[in-house]
Every structure is written in structure tokens, then in C-alpha cells.
Image 1 (cartoon, rainbow, N blue to C red):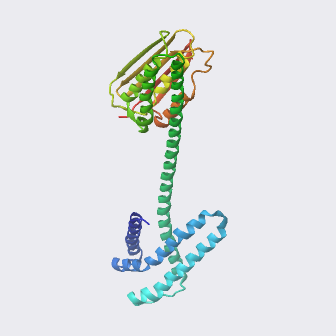
Image 2 (tube, helix red, strand yellow):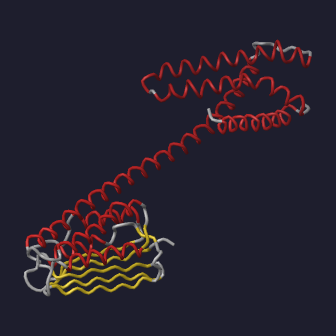
Image 3 (cartoon, rainbow, N blue to C red):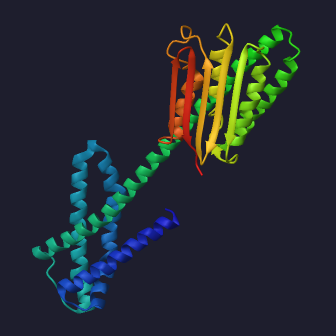
Length: 339
């Protein structure tokens, strides 16, 4: 038992002692010091029954196959404690401190004693059950938090290999063409991987860092395509230090190349807008797409993971719309960033 719990138990019994002594004064009309002395003398008996209920009866209650044993032991504990209480009052407390006797088997007194014990145990058990219920709720919240964090880690673990696989395909094309840009592409990929592997471990990064990796990725992709790709990138960030979950925006850009420029036979167009104003992020990506080749839109691993990450980290603070229309795929994200 920790010192804090010991202090909590002492505090409970101290409050109980003072409160019960006050009630006894009101009920029996006796001096307060006499009432307090009596409560102090019988307190160990009450505490014994209470802690027996705490550490034996309640655990037994959780095992529903032993109901008969539970009832029997509970009744026996109350009977034994009631008799102990009466024996102490009849042969120790009253003769020593008040020089008077009471009959041991006086039924109104026995019932009053049993009721006093019941009220004591009920009060202490109520406090304990409230604490256990609170602790259980906190434990459930912690488990849910750990579950969500594990899921988030899994989603990010999926995103990184998925991103690497797509980027290696780009390098393969450049190498197959024996392009002079292959070395530059490898260097850019190295920078992006360094960001993905090391800087994305934090739960939040600067929006400026996310924007920088988007720029690097765009430059990497430009090496692969010739003049058939027209790309417009507009960036307007009011607060570069604003925090955002890492790799939340890059999958949209990656998707626009994978399902846009890569699958379009003719000229391809990609428009990317990144605007942050007053903690409100507006990020949109529009790319040409062959609708017959992408039924239902660009719903690959990347966007599916992003949707789930948004639900986990920005519940109620985001709006994501995607659609395939007139040969173009639209992804539009509104996101409220933290202060």
C-alpha cells in the first residue's frame, strides 16, 4: 500500500470518527469527550470488520460461483463482530470508564450494534467502490489510448514502406532510361527518407517541415516526367511553427503523381494548394485521372491511412472530401490545427 493510500485511509477513519462521535452526542445527549472516547475504543473492531469485507468478502463477491459461501461468511462475520462489540462494551468499556454494566444479550442493543456496524461497513465500502469505479474508468481510458496509439503507429508503419515502394519505382524508371538525373533523384530520396525515418517520430512537427518535404518530393517527381506534366504548387503559410501530425499531407501529393501523371497517357496536370491562416489549414490537390482506370477514386493505402489518422488525431476538427469528376480527381482537406 502506497503512502498516499495509507493517508487516504487514515483521513477516512478520522472523518468517520469525528462525525460518528457528533451523531452519538446528538442521539444519546452525552458529553462530546465521552462520545469520542467510546468511538475510539470500538473503532478497531469496526475497522477489523471493514477490512475483512474489503480484502476477503469483495474479492469473493467477484466469483459468482460461490454465492452460498459469500452469504454464509458475510453473515458469520457480522455475527462474530457484533458479539465481540457487545462483549467489549459489556465487560471492558462500560465497567472501566463508566462503572456500569449492560446485559450482553439485550436484543435492542444487539440490533443497534449490528446496525452501527452495517452503516460503518456500508460507508467505507461505498467510498472504496467509488474509488475502484474511478480507477477502472481511468484504466479503460488508458487502454483505449494505448490501443489508438498502437493503431496510429501501425498506420504510420504502413505509410513509410508504401511511400518508399512508390519512390523506388520512380528511381527504377530513371535508371532504366539511364537518365543523368538518377544521382540527383537518389540524393533527394535520401533527404526525404531522413525526414521520414528520424524527424517523423514526434507526434507533431512544424507545418514548415511538412511543407518542405512536400517541395522535395515534388522536385523528385519532376525529374521523372518531361514537359507532359504541368504542375502548380501554391503555398501560403501564416505561421510556419504551427504543429501538425507528420506525413499527413504528403500522401495526397504522392497519390496525385501515382494515380495522375503516372496513369495518364497524355498531358497531365497537378495543382496543389497549401494555405494556413489563423490556425485553419486548407490543403487541396487536383490531378488529371483516367476515370475508367480508377473506379471509385484514388482510395489506395495512402489515403485510407490518412483518413484513419485524421479520425484518430483530429476528431471533429477536420473535413476531408474526395471525388472523381470530369477526368480529374479532387482531394480537399480542411483542418483545424492546435495553438
